[in-house]
Image 1: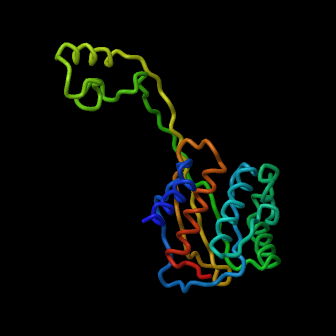
Image 2 (image 1 turned 90 degrees about the horizontal axis):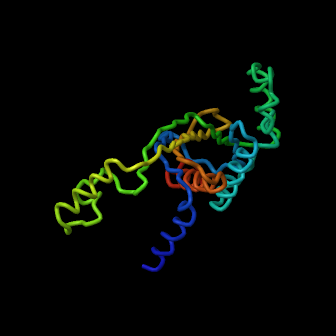
Image 3 (image 1 turned 60 degrees about the horizontal axis):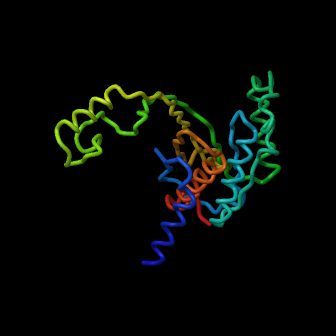
Amino acid sequence: MKQLIYLVLAVSMLTGCASTKLINSWSDKENTPQAYQNIGVTALFPNSSNRYVTEHAIVDELKTKGLNSMSTVDVFPLAARLNEAGDVLKNSEAIRDGVVAKVKENKIDALLIITLFDMTKEERWVNDRNFTMGGTGYYGSPFGMHGSYYDYYAYSLGTVYNSGYYVDDISYFIECNLYDVKTEQLIYRAQTKSTNIKSVEEEAKALAYIVAKQLINKKVVSK
């Protein structure tokens, strides 16, 4: 029982401060789990700092699971300098050749590519009094099942005309694709959602924990 409690606490410490959640995953059922010698991790984000943090968080987590891996932020062509790429990004053939060359040079036999595939923004109303649904029933009234009708009426009328403000909830949707280099086939895909990010470091750790756990539990790779 104590071991279970410790496990729950450990998971909470890893993901408690982050909003990142797994929303979808897929793995090739016909794929035979491989003991990859070097899993390359590349995060294609506009911000090079976010890429660095994300790649290293995933590499660290994979290594704790016994999976050898490496960050590619300082290896792949223009990886850390996307804002300087200019017309080079238009030459897809040159980019492909450059990536293939670096994969061979670093003996990468599986490649995990992380991208931001969508972002949404939703407006939400926040009541100053922090009571929702006006004075409705059990949720809005501070009196609960007690208090008179005139107390309830006065309170409810106040919440109807109470001031508040709008906030924006911004959600980021991340996609992680793992490719087998030899077959060039996609063998695993995961999609996550992060809302109102406060710490890139904490969200990166949460993403890393989710992906590493999935790769092991779904038997996508072997040690």
